[in-house]
Image 1 (cartoon, rainbow, N blue to C red):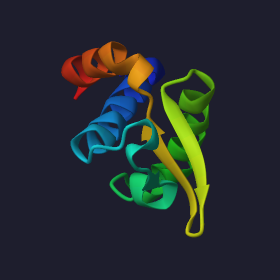
Image 2: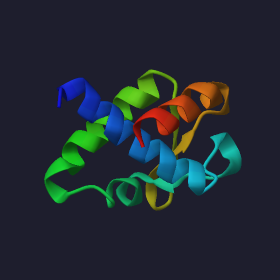
Image 3: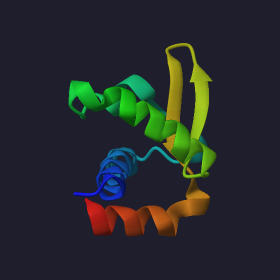
Image 4: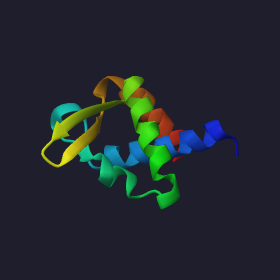
Length: 89
């Protein structure tokens, strides 16, 4: 598998987890530490970097909380997020 395809699969898994938990914009955030728990330990650093890239691309929003940083999906990217989940998850 190519690196880009692997990254898309990880993106789809992350999106799927947030999507199913209803983590949209200001409706709730998932702590980053919880979001990466479903991935193998040796990939968690890469997943955190992926999260930063997805924030820059506008797919995810970050928020600071008393427990640390949380992430949520951006409603403005709903169609693209659903396409990625459908195709790669």
